[in-house]
Every structure is written in structure tokens, then in C-alpha cells.
Length: 238
Picture 1: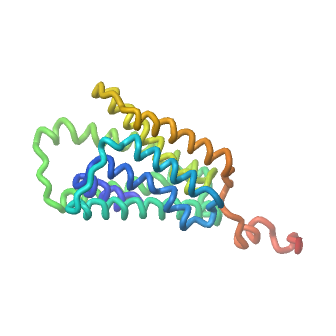
Picture 2: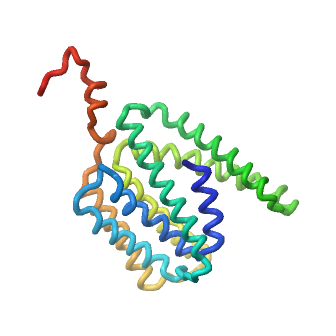
Picture 3: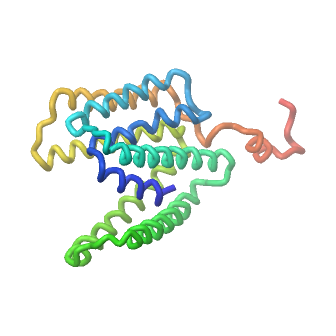
């Protein structure tokens, strides 16, 4: 759920432009709407507009050559695995196999396993890391990853318990906005009118999605939930 998508993202993003990487993950809400039984009729146009807003924001960084097709395929596979993870967590909530108080331990197990898998992949590929990187960069980067992942992963799972999977996936658009704004501030670049229009369209679509498609809590009602919630001795046909 974490290690393989991260590895595919790292491999694919080195072979395509930054804008293409962002677009591949911006597709998450549409992908989830196609496979999620909690999808809402009429939500696809709102999700498509949001993806269009992301494309407008990152338009200067979008380029594609056929030799980059392998990188795009890896990124789409990573996005697909991420979508599966969202749906899987929603099913855990629906079947009462994941509760709010278990989120931290659930996240810690995933982060630990992912770290081991990525470390094994890193050293197994025989990548040569300069010695000055080992002394100055690797430890701070590792700590940064732990702090951010340790904070954002439990938050994501908490949100998945309170909204549908495709709604939670729209937060990828917010991350894009923050990243682009941060890059513009650090480099002193001035976004064009197209980027500004996309920056307005993204929050408008997110507001539309959350106002017109109220999020369900705890997943869909199933026979398993009904039998678990209402003991047979007290349950009525109604």
C-alpha cells in the first residue's frame, strides 16, 4: 500500500516532466469514481473540472515524448495502487475492522514495512550515494520523511473514515496547489493567467464536491454491518 507506489513514483517521476507526474495522481478521483460503490451520480463532471484546474496550474511543466511512456505507465500504476489503498481502507471501516483508535498503530505498521521494502530496493539496485550525502543529507531527509508521513498518513486514514474515497482523493489537488505556490515563492516566478485560473477552479470544484455530495460516514451499509450492529435476538424484519 505504500512501498510499491512510492518506488514506482520515484522511478517514473525521474523519466517524465513534473507536470505529467502531477496529472497522473490528479486522476485519482476519476479512477475511484469508476470503481467505488460509494460514487455519486453527477460527480464525474466536478472531478473532471478539478483535474482540468490542475492541468492549468501545472501547464508550464507538462511535456511528453514517446520514450517517456514507461515512466507514465509506472506513475499510472502507482496511482492505481493508491486508489486501491483508499478503497481498501474504506472497506475496513465498513466491516468494522478498523476503528479510530487503531489508526496510529495501523499507520505505524505500514510506514515500518514500507521503509524496510524501500531500503532493500535502494541498496539492492546498487545505487552509489556520495559520502557527503550520507553524512549531510540522508539523515535529515529520513527524519523529514518520518515527520511528514507520520503526520499525514494517520490524517488521511482519519479522513477516509469520514468521507468517501473519491472525495479524499481530491486532497491531491490541494497538495498540488501548495507545492506550486511554494515553488513560485521560492523561485520568484510569476504564474501566468492560465495558472491563476486553475488555482481558482480547483478550490471551487472541491467546494462543489463537498457541498453537493455529502460524505458518508463509516462506509456503505452492508448485511455484515447490520448483523454485527443488531443482535439477531433483537433485530426486527423492519
